[in-house]
Image 1 (cartoon, rainbow, N blue to C red):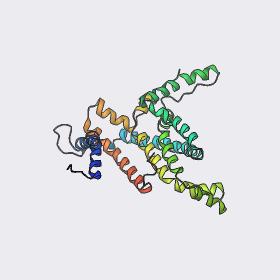
Image 2 (cartoon, rainbow, N blue to C red; image 1 turned 180 degrees about the vertical axis):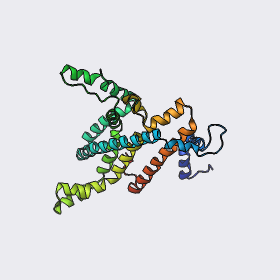
Image 3 (cartoon, rainbow, N blue to C red; image 1 turned 45 degrees about the vertical axis):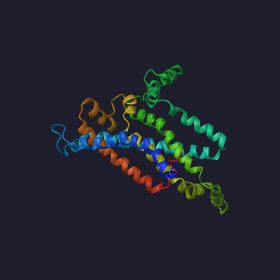
Image 4 (tube, one colour; image 1 turned 120 degrees about the vertical axis):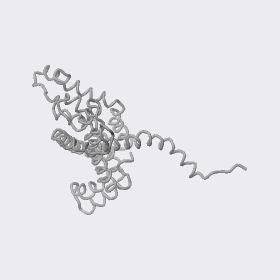
Length: 279
């Protein structure tokens, strides 16, 4: 008689491909970053001198600018995404599915191509300025400025804010909102006292999913900033690709990991059930 293994044990083997993928593309690269960050470029001995390069004036300026632009982009995404998510939550299933598809559709296109498209639109002789010139209006001169980088960040990362907030809003029990209104709360009071607190897990998840990629990006600043505006991602890229200094680049990368870890702690605190990320 054939021996049958418990179903639970069989299911564990289904995770084997993911375990191998995680080991090859997450754990091993992470260990390499840690190794290079704490070793000298010459000799390979243990050292902390790589981290001193992080606190130079140029690097700190790039990090400060990255934090500022990422924060502004995240706030703009939240201000745009929350009303949109509320509108989507009020629609019926068919309408919502179509509108959500419209927002997800650009994400099917390569990230680099989408950013190139904005470069074509915003450049001095680009599509937007050609139209403005035809209408005898002043040209738009935001290419190679922080404003262009913020625009690129908002465009690329807005769906990552809309979906978590929408996912939480549709789970809010309508009876709770109706009860607040029956007890005399106005629309504004219902929003501040009921809807906003209940949607906090989605907001935290959305903020994390926008802020971290915006903080670490280097492609958007390269293309829309014209390589004139250095963010921390650009500095790290230069250390790895141009200066071939993996040790200092790894140390800078570990500093950014601090922000990633803090974001994970924040998400675990306010979204313990994963309501804002399960979309």
